[in-house]
Structures are given as C-alpha cells and as structure tokens.
Amino acid sequence: MSVQTDRTDTGTGTGTAAAPGVRKTDVSPPDGTGIRKGKGKGKGQGKDPAGRRGGASAPYVLLLPALLATVILLGWPLIKNGMLSFQNLNPRQLILHLTEWRGFDNYTDVLSSADFWKVVQRTVVFTAVNVVLTMVFGTLVGLLLARLGKRMRLVLLLGVVLAWAMPVIAATTVYQWLFAQRFGVVNWLLAKAGWSSMADYNWFGTQLSTFSVITLLIVWQSIPFVAINLYAATTTIPKELYEAASIDGAGTWKSFSSVTFPFIRPFLWATTFLEVIWIFKAFPQIFAMNKGGPDRLTETLPIYAFVEGPGNQHYGMGAAISFLTILILLALTAYYLRTVLKQEEEEL
Amino acid sequence: MKRSLMARLWPNATALVLFVVFTFPVYWMFATSLKPTGDIIADTPVFVPTDITFDHFKKALDADHFWTLVGNSLTVTVLAVVFSLVIGLLASFALARMRFKGRRGFLLTFMIAQMAPWEVMVIAIYMIVRDADLLNSLVPLTAFYMVMVLPFTILTLRGYVAAVPKELEESAMVDGCTRRQAFVKVIFPLLAPGLMATSLFGFITAWNEFPLVLILNKDAEKQTLPLWLSSFETTFGDDWGATMAAASLFAIPILVLFVYLQRKAVSGLTSGAVKG
Image 1 (tube, rainbow over the protein chains, first blue to last red):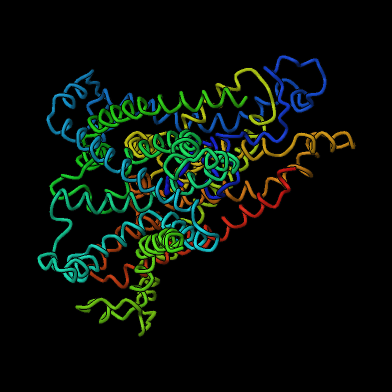
Image 2 (image 1 turned 60 degrees about the vertical axis):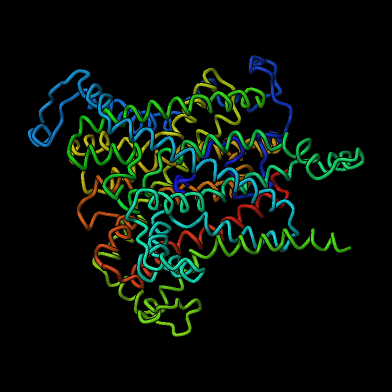
C-alpha cells in the first residue's frame, strides 16, 4: 500500500508481509514443484504442458493488456514530463496553450540555484535519518516478535498492524492533534515530566521540530513493514541451526551473528532499499502536515517540485525538478533492481 | 531461576510498551472523536472517555459533500482494484507458468513500474489530463490508480500462481479439462487468498492516494476522501473532535478491511491447500 500507504513491494517475497511466515521467496522460492525446466528451450520434449499448450503467442496475449496500460499511463507522463522540462511554461503559456521551447535553460536555472541544492541536501539527510531509524527499530521489533510467546506476539502484531493500516492522511491528522500547541497530549506529557517550557510549544514553528514530528510519523508507520517481514524471515531459519550453534557453545550474540544474521541479510537489503525509495518520495506526510513550512524549510524534492510547479505556476521549472528527482530515484533503484534480478536468476 | 524469570519478563514488558506506543495514536483518534468538546480541551487530558458523544461524528457526516466524496472514493478505488486484478491475473499467469522470449524483460518492466515516482510526475499528468479535457473527472483517477497498483498486483499474484503445484493443473488436464477449464476450476479457487491479499494492498493504495487528486480535481464535488480530510482542519479550525471523527470515518474501512482480510489471507495460505 505506497499507501501505505502507499506501501507496496516488489514481489520478491516481501509482498505478503501481511502473511507472516507464509512466503519466503528470498530464501526458498515458493516454487512448489521444484521441477522447472532449465532455459525453456526444451519445447518439443513434452512434459511441460504449461509451457506449450496455449500456443506460442499465448503469453504475449496475456501480457498485452497489462503492458499497454503501463506503457500508456506511465510511459506517457514520463515522456511528457521530459518534454515539459525543456519548455517555458508559465500561466500565460498555459492559458494560451503556447509551446515555447527553452532548451536546457530550465536545467541551468535549477542547477545553479542555491535553493535547489539546499533542498537536495535536506532530502538526503531526511531520507537517511528516517531510513536508519526505521531499519534499526524495525529490525529490533522484528527480532522481538520472533522471541515472544504466542500470545504476546499476537498482541504486538495487532499493535503493529494497526499502525500500518492507518491511512496516511488520517495518521498525519492524528499526529497534528497529538502535537497540537494547545491541548496536544504530547506537550502535556512533556510538561508533566518536568519540562515545563514545553507546555505551550509550537511544534510547527521551526524546521527541526516540524521534521521531528514528520519523522516520528513516518518511522511509526514504516516500522511494521520491516518488522513483520523480518519476523517472517526468521521463521524460515531451521531450528537445527540454533541447536547446533548452542552445542558448539554459542551465546546469544554469537548465535545471532552466525545463524540469524546471515539468514535475514537479504531481507535487510531489500527492505532498506524499498524504504529509501519510499521515504525519498514521501509526499502526503510532509505536505499535509505543514505544507512544507515553516518558510518552505521542510520541503523535500517532491514537495519542492510541487510547490514550484503547480504551486507557483512555473510548470517548466517544476518539470525540470521532477526530472532530476526521477534521475536520482533511478540511480537508487538501479542498484536495488540489480539485486532483485540476481535473486530472480537464481530462482529461475 | 531468577535469571530465567528476568529473561522471560523483559521481552514481554518491552512488547507491552511497544503495543501501547503503536496503538496510542489510533486509540487517541477514536477517543477524541467520542469525547465532548469540554473533555477535549481540558487542561488535563481525559485518557478514557467516560462521557461519550456522537456529536462530532454527526458534524463530520453533515459536512459538505461528505457522501458524494465517499461515493467518489469508493468508485475510483473499487474500479481501479478490479481492473488491475483482471489484467494482472492474466499477466501473472503468463509470467509464472509460461516460458517465452522476453520474459525477463517483462518482469523487469513491471519491477521498474512498481517504483514509478508518481508523486513527482503530477505536473505532466496534469497537462495530459487537462489537454484531454478531463480535469475534475473520476475517469483519469481510476485509470492512474489502476496502473499504480498493477505492477504490485502482477508481481505478487505471480508468486501465488507459482505456489500452486503444476501437478494439480496437469492432472486436471489429464482428466479432460482444457487449459482454461483447469485454470477456472482448479487454480482460481486456490488463488482466492492471494487475490484477497493483493486487492487489499491495492485498495489501500488507491484509497490513500493524495497528490494526484490534489492537482487534478479542484472541484469540491469531484474530490476524494483524503483531500476532504486534509482540508477538514482548515474548514473546522481547531475543532479536534470533528477532525478526529472525520479521520476515524476515513480510517475505519481500511482498519476493518486490513484486520479482516489479513487473517483470511493468512489462514487461506497456511491451511495447507496451497502447499500441496
């Protein structure tokens, strides 16, 4: 559900995180048969009815609708975005439907503006902080889930799932209320805990405090995905390995580093990359929390592109910013895709 | 003895604290929405609502266009999920069960599409939709939400299809079924939990979508619930009771669906039918 919301995944096995311990593709592919054909060249050799009976064009026919929809509805905006980024497109041109080309000027303008680089820097720091916090606490919660007894695990799972299922905008609204300056329960708690200057604190007045609330919100909603996936991963570890380790005299730490960790490492990798991508392009949490304020100080790249484009009606500039954002995302994604494809190869 | 007691106590105590931390915001939303305004703006927060009122819910339900927007959200979400399930099932079947040239290329395409930065493409989408004269319409929303959830649907369903033993299909075909019949009669029922899990995630994505509808549909009657909720505060000022009631109304369907469907999907999978 990017969704969570918007939280979706890659189908490498993390997808059914909602079904802990059921699919563990990364470790053992759910290929119930285990008798897949080598490279699919054995067409004439019978025994592979799934591969042939539909006729040679069948797979393409089945894939056509999905491919068409994706290419048109995703590819077209991408190309359009590229074209717009070379245009001089402000309210005048927009209303009169004028197409004025500007060459690379939008890019020169964006890349030479100090604001842009400040936003890039901010986005990187923001992403790094959120991803590290999410991964560390998500992993800890996941390991805790694995250690708990049945009943307590169910309790914690319920809590985690509730946080996960909360729609992003609803969660954002609730956090605004938790951190409200007057009558917000957080300020009350802090004051009660002896920090009396916090009794009337305006969380949305400074950059750091606004980011703190946003970070708390994002980490709170991102931990469940990591935790449940990780817990599911640990259920795939054969018990005998732990027995063997304890016979060898391994303590808690040793059995973690020599048994648990090697098993969960692929999950940690995959989840980290997904979190990087998701958090990098987080939009509703930041926008709905304080519209990128105060003074545009919490704008990350997606918000910046939105505010510059539709907001300030510099559509061409906005498109150039989004194109650069997409490039950065692509660089991040490429590394992840390579990992996924490698796994895929092993699975085939 | 003492040590083992401690060893057992610690994880449980931590789990309990974490449970409170994770559930509190959700609890606080519901609790606030049920408290009379006097309790909401009390100097000492009322942690357990004793004096329950439904006035805030009434206010939220009576808000302008609420029911129109519920209709919009439901229409867009359900259509997007259904279309993506139908199209996605076909594609996932091909990817899971057939060998053909370019299979890896297709897989790669959907994997990349999965990570599409919809959040930053709003300007281009706005221009396309405007040129097609479809601003303030539910049609482009449905179409784009469908494509947003499609790659996930395909890649996940592919896993579920692959998990159904080929032998089941083959034996049905030996018994005289055509390939299509084998699919409809044997495989499809086994895919039910997978379809549920997939549609759940699709539903959440579409139900939550914010940036696109924010820029495409300015007309108050053509918006969806996330926009309504995000602007609720502006409309109602500091009326946190009504705002939390509105947030609850928006969240309840997802929370219920998630808890309900998740269990179904899990039990369906673990019941053994799939493991063959």
